[in-house]
Image (cartoon, rainbow, N blue to C red; front, side, top):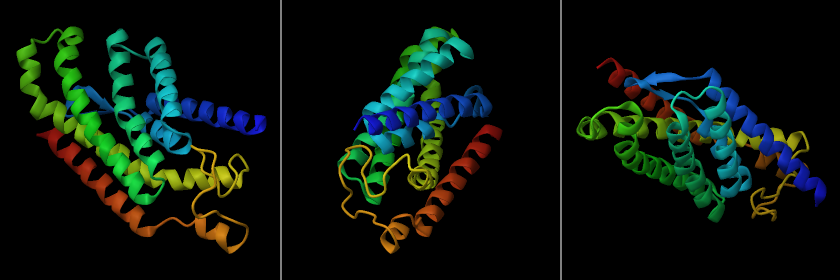
Length: 233
C-alpha cells in the first residue's frame, strides 16, 4: 500500500512538472495577441483520468501557482483565471470519467469539460478581464461572442482531442514500466471490469482503437483550422 502511494505521488509530481514544461515551451496566440493556447490542461486532464478529480485539482493548483511566480505576467488575477480554466476542463472531465471508466465515459467527460470551460470562462472574462486589462466592460462584453467564446471552444476541443490521443499510450507506458499494475483502476484502486492478465488479455487491454484515434485527430484538425481562420480574419 505504501509503495502504491509513493508511486502515485511520483507520477502526479512528474505530470505536474510536465504540464509546467509544456506550458513554457508551447504558447500559441489565437484570435488576439493576449489570448494564447498552451497544452498544460491536457496533462492535467490525463492526471485526472489516471487518479481522479482531486489529483487533477492539485496538479492544476501547483502548476498555476508556480507559473504565477515564474513566468506569469497577469498577477494573481491571471493565476486565478488559469486555475479556474484548468479545473473547469480537467476536473469536470475526470469527475465524469471516474463515474464511468469506459470510452463513452471518457468522451462524455471531455465534452462536459469543454462546455464547463466555455461557460465558466465567459463568466470570468466578463468580470475579471476589465480589471487586469483596463478595457471598458462594454468592450469586453462585446468580445464575449466574437473572441472569448470561439477561443475557449477551440481551446477545449484541442484539449479534448489531445487527451483522447495520449491517454491510452500514457497508461500503456506506465503499465509497462511497472509504475501502474496491469488491470487496475488507478482512480479507485479497484480491479477494472475487464482485468488485463498476462498474455492475450494484457495485449488486448493495450490496444488503441483506430476509430478513436481517427475521430480525435479529425476534431484536432478542425479546431486548428478554425483557430487559423479566425486568427487571420
